[in-house]
Amino acid sequence: MPAVRKKPATSKRSTGTPDRILDVAGRLMQTRGYNGFSYADVAAEIGITKASLHHHFSTKAVLGAAILERYARGFRAALAAIDAAGLGAPLRLERYARLHAKVLRQDRLCLCGILAAEYLTLPAPMQRTIRAFFADNERWLARVIGEGRSGGSLHPQGSDEQVALMLLGGLEGAMLVAWPLKDMASFAASARRLLASLGGPANRRG
Amino acid sequence: MPAVRKKPATSKRSTGTPDRILDVAGRLMQTRGYNGFSYADVAAEIGITKASLHHHFSTKAVLGAAILERYARGFRAALAAIDAAGLGAPLRLERYARLHAKVLRQDRLCLCGILAAEYLTLPAPMQRTIRAFFADNERWLARVIGEGRSGGSLHPQGSDEQVALMLLGGLEGAMLVAWPLKDMASFAASARRLLASLGGPANRRG
DNA sequence: GTATCCATACCTACTAGTAGGTAGATTCGG
DNA sequence: CCGAATCTACCTACTAGTAGGTATGGATAC
Picture 1 (cartoon, rainbow over the protein chains, first blue to last red):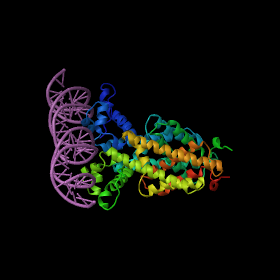
Picture 2 (cartoon, rainbow over the protein chains, first blue to last red; picture 1 turned 60 degrees about the horizontal axis):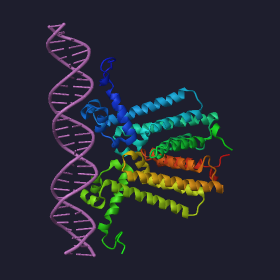
Picture 3 (tube, chains in turn orange, brown, blue, green; picture 1 turned 120 degrees about the vertical axis):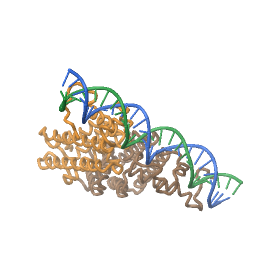
Picture 4 (cartoon, rainbow over the protein chains, first blue to last red; picture 1 turned 90 degrees about the vertical axis):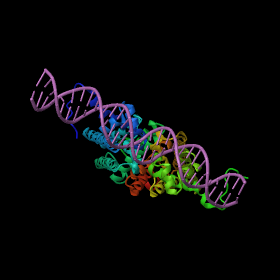
């Protein structure tokens, strides 16, 4: 049961612990996957014991779900922020691609991408969140593509949904292929090619 | 006398064991990842003990490397077969995409795709093989794209290497996104969109 | 004010189970 | 007989998770 955090001043070392756990374990999940880190890893890095970790997150499944939901929430917020900026469709898609680029630049993979690879081994709640993340992204992309198409700023082939799927998969895959070599340039090039294939105004060559 | 490998003359039940191990463990690696299966899993499914497994593949790293190398070898052979068919660039790329579709239709992920997600946790030899697999695919794709471009059957934007990278990442990512829902149709649609973006003869937009 | 009470956060020390891996005996085909 | 293939029986290290205790910092009762 979540207490109403009203501890502003004194003990700063204890109040921040759940967030520190989410940060550290989240980074490990984005670099090594759910099956690639242990409670012992997290505890050692933070400087508490495994038992204390269990005090804040009763099981690994609970911790994993918390990290994943926080990530998905942050991504949805980023999409809302893009929408709120009042840009045209091509620029919104470019910002979308930049969201992924930012993750890779931090030496991380998209959390939902790396977890999709481990999908069959994950607890059911995490599986559901991953599917919802992809579905949300597809919907958002399809909407932006549709707006660009009807507004004349994009001229893609295929349905909005098909193009959205290609874009989502294309960016996730570009991260995955760039990951072993930490090759930011290859990701950026792929992202640019994908966006250019939508027939936006800045990319009509010849 | 070829001391390298003895021939499967008669007793098929014992000589077949290493291959059965590679088949079973390979399927597990393509569905659950390297960290998602154990020697116990493989032994139980085959019906031998863990100790017998170690007799054939001394360590899990050795087994993993053997599976990965066999997979990469098979993929290279498939690329050679595509080349040997004497097709034009667009049809060769379509066959390439179908290689990936076939894997997904077997309810598996591209081995190198799933392992790329686990990259940081893998033994160094496997890491090297994964990088080589991607590099091989990029080279092959870039060559085919270059041939299509100079032959006039493809009109892609961007350099051959950039387009190759987009295609490779796009297909790997399309598999990854389709994986949780086992959604063959979404993979097929993404693959078609990706190929269409190369400006092949059947896809020239006005 | 101070004594009690309670919740939070942390600890030490443990459990059962599983991971990969090994030693040595046995089985069995050629 | 030889040797590959397999077994039983084990090991050590590590996994997630638990039991039970300690220190601290408010609240509240007297």
